[in-house]
Image 1: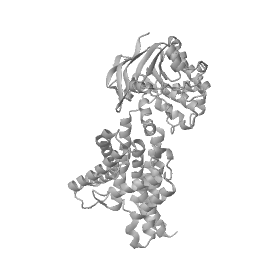
Image 2: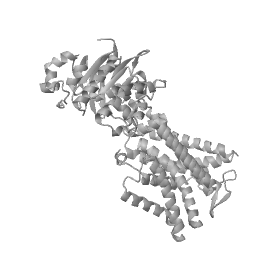
Image 3: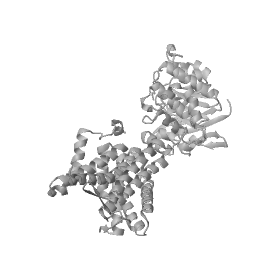
Image 4: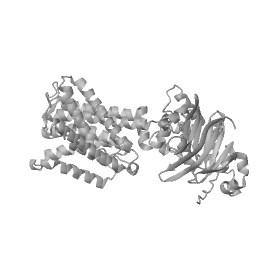
Length: 297
Length: 258
């Protein structure tokens, strides 16, 4: 395998990791409240801004910045849930969808107002940009950390959802809200917790995104948020494993398309991504790992 | 009647624009099995849902004799009603199909923090050995009868003082119904009060001490179970053809004419 292909695979893995983190949270929120949350990518943006404009600017070390960013993402998502989505819990599904678009636009525009739309150059502290040679391909310490942190997060999330009382309660609530209430499960708190977990993962993805691409702006969350939605749909909405798989597939496909095609096609990468979505859904309407039952709900 | 554990007084409940309960009053005494009988759409499930806090009455009161005095349920959230000691085993079983049998039982004990949860699971596995065999299977893979046993056990995992059962016989084979009703009598013998909602009046009147009949959201008849079993209008409407009596066969749904 040529070093060039290996390099593309590594880039795809890194991009896919960030998509997977956002997609998993997106899917988690969908599965529990059937909400297509377009504001989810903007939580990643807020995470990125708090990382670089607050925590990194204050000179904190990375081992403080990461948990602080996770906390910001969790808090922002939980607050959005409490203020915006909870009051319309009983409303038809489409209301939540429209509202999430509204929240997304609001967050972006408040961001532009307060911080300007001009992208800022940013950089994570430490020696994260050190290059390593990996069979001829170039890998930075940050790349390795991104992939490792994503895999650890996905593992922890899986254990949380499978083993813990709160995780099982989330699955119970996503299946049958009223039966969950009859068990004494405080469903509102469980739903807030699901938003918080998803928000924490989105915040982490925002940190990674800014660190990897070296710039942040108030609109940076929109396209990755949309792609995470695509990844979640490809994987089968509501399935966490599917969302992670979809994220990696999408990241990989995107890099391969850009890397393998002549450079004049590079600017069509998003068109290819959505084309891929349409193709997958034509063949597998429920996504790769989705169940028809979840579609009906 | 013994001291009332649950007292429902003149509740009026709407679902959207239609009134589903009209001035319903009833009481369940400590240690009793009380049955609520009625056809499809008569208001049985709405009554239970209002008691457990899923529906809110527009007027009327619901009082539960809590361990530290009477508590009004009408403004409590469902989880706080469970905490008081009321378990509601919902219509159609509603086990969590994607969760394992064990996980379903853990959810039944969601509000408990004592160290007896494992011992209780063990106890119910003795009562329903089939659940032990199926412990790691997804609840959705169980048969209807097994799901009913799971739903019943899951409700009991909260160690309720009042167990409310919504049509436990629905869609089950006669032998399974017999087994479930035997368990219901045992549960009462162990000190849990039971409020039983049934369409299968023959079975329900056999185990119940007292019963109410609900039609179009109104309580129309109430009395001792043995009296109701002899009441001509109950016999006609709910016990129907004599041959269905005590066999546990499904009684045809009553017509809810206006």
